Image 1 (spheres, rainbow, N blue to C red):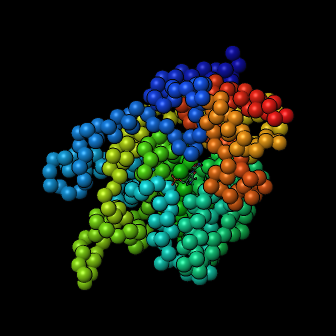
Image 2 (cartoon, protein in one colour):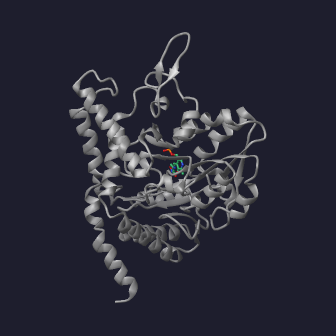
Image 3 (tube, helix red, strand yellow):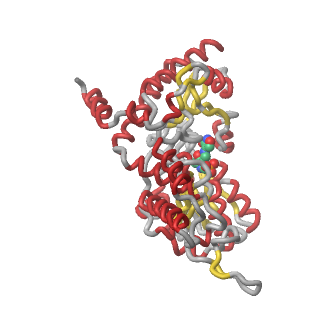
Length: 417
Ligand code: 7TS
């Protein structure tokens, strides 16, 4: 046995992917007469039974509105809801549940921060983002820039799909007020060197935000070790329900920020003369929140915590490694995004084929991938492509599924050759 096969055996023992797949009922169906091969996890991940059961039980046994304190169901719902906040706090290693704010998702969280920082921005100030951002981490900043006279400046990307650190160093200057970058790119899979970048930004007093939407499904961030001011993610990419996401923010900054929306829950006292705000985190949570969804997200995090995370990461790396090995078996196929540090996401093109045709033909074979611009048009422009095909893997995908993807791609390529 050589070293590689020893390593593979260890992965298989520590990580029983077939047992894990049984926890995800949606995966065991046929699509277009073929067993489903779900490789669109970057768009949204599937949910384990633990999440479905937790939400079902919540609605059957404890639903009522939260923070009203008038009766037993209300207390149960509040306990479950605030317990979920503590689960998220622990997942991120945030210092306090005051720093964990529920949002609709990553998009709303970034809009909340951009609006909250607007009073700190003035004409001539610069907001550093990058050329590989999802539109959710570009457009809210452009809207705030429009309002304040600040400017959105993109850090360049290298051809391999890494953040160009020379570009970052040359753009970070006395006018920089905010650095907002993806922890992991949704198109390229690149894991950015965010800890180093934050340290440099902090040395100049720059406020930092990490878009963790594509990071959290693959590894657990530590917001205190990263020392970012804000960290945002969506539940639905982390195997939890849609409709909820998280904004982590340092309490001192959140205290300074004005509320995002007004209404119930977010106030301390309302009168026509003067209205005052509730304490953190409620100041940013106007209206009845997504209670069952918070419970579902906590169940997803608990489920992930029950797995061997190191073995899970090793299994995911094995999927990407196998995919990389198979690229040469498809004539004209090339990968976009070949960074050294990557999560298992593969964007690609095949000469002579439009990405959307690849997607349609794979779907006929039961294989779900995403095609298009992936809400990252500036990055598509950088690579000079209208879009890419993207296979994004999760820990429940198998090496066999990777092989099925490439067998199908060979077929598609032959059909059009
Ligand atoms: N940021 C990143 C890095 C993302 O990948 C996405 C969604 C978002 C923000 C927005 O998240 P939302 O939950 O608020 O919509 N990315 C993708 C994708 O890659 N394919 O579909 C959605």
